[in-house]
Length: 148
Image 1 (spheres, helix red, strand yellow):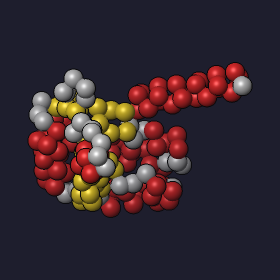
Image 2 (tube, rainbow, N blue to C red; image 1 turned 60 degrees about the vertical axis):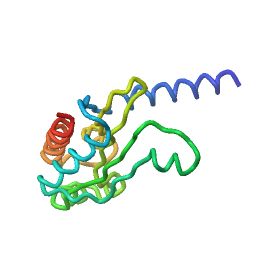
Image 3 (cartoon, helix red, strand yellow; image 1 turned 90 degrees about the vertical axis):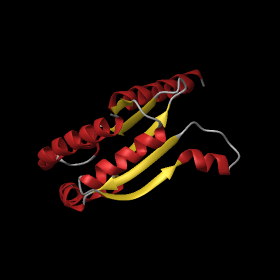
Image 4 (spheres, rainbow, N blue to C red; image 1 turned 60 degrees about the horizontal axis):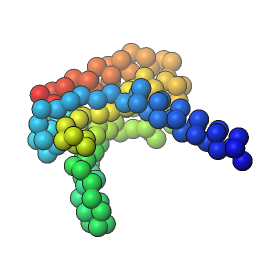
């Protein structure tokens, strides 16, 4: 039993470290609502399709729960996403792209997204390295533009 518990704790800790290392985040100088509005404008200006905006706080409130402002923006561009799915069709599970805007316990607003290079470890994307670099650069630019 002790070995199983130790293994479970080790696995969970490793998962948290993995998640922290692969979460890119940018501090925003605006509220969550203003940052989301800026992000959506940046995405529209870059001809991205915004598929959905999910206000997790509103969902929590409807369930009678509390949550600091937390909004997920789901977006993409078929020209880019299709290239990744041509390398590995299972990428359809990871797409479209997502950015989360949230307020932490100290009241600071953040824009975050998963590092695209992580996808190389989960999918066969050796032939898509150039596309992954473009996505990484675009996500970073989108987050910084939304935060400023």
